[in-house]
Amino acid sequence: MSRPKVLLLDEPSMGLSPQMIANIFRIITEINKTGVTILLVEQNAQQALQRAHRAYILETGNVVKEAKAQDLLNDPAVREAYLGTGAHS
Image 1: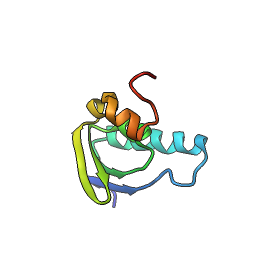
Image 2: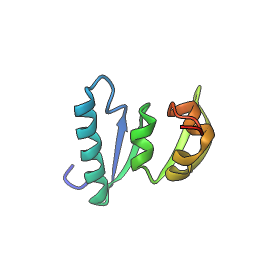
Image 3: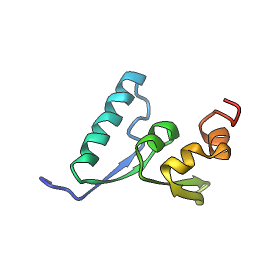
Image 4: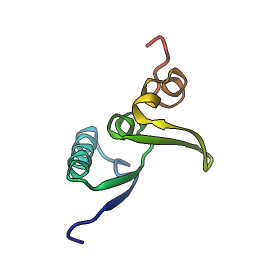
């Protein structure tokens, strides 16, 4: 496809070194800047939330929280449960 409108990615950082993860997310960001919508499924919540516009948190296949990604990134409960940093970090 020469000009996709949507790119679906499932765990693009799985099993990669930290340097490769940074590179992958840089590329994802650049693709998004060209106007391509990206649907990203990713366990690396910190990286995903830093770049996403909107996010959905799934637990055992159910959406348990949804909001603007920045709001979730700053939510103390989300930080503690999914980002490994509590409100006191």
